[in-house]
Image (cartoon, rainbow, N blue to C red):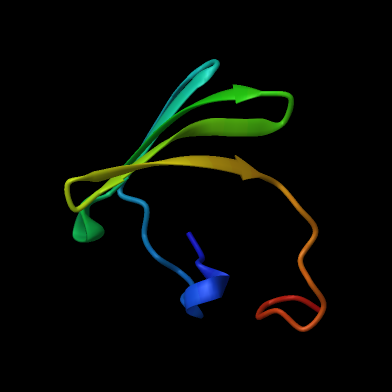
Length: 71
């Protein structure tokens, strides 16, 4: 996983479970669990970390020019 706003890339996702339309992934070294539902090429769900829960929607977009790893 990458976090461009934090200038971090290559964060290892340790577990992924996908049972359409539900998805769950974990990043164990950060104590992160994300649980969401896929609909219309978008995943809407909850990001859980450090005892807090946040709503988070994920979607595929084109990279911005000049971002790491892009032409």
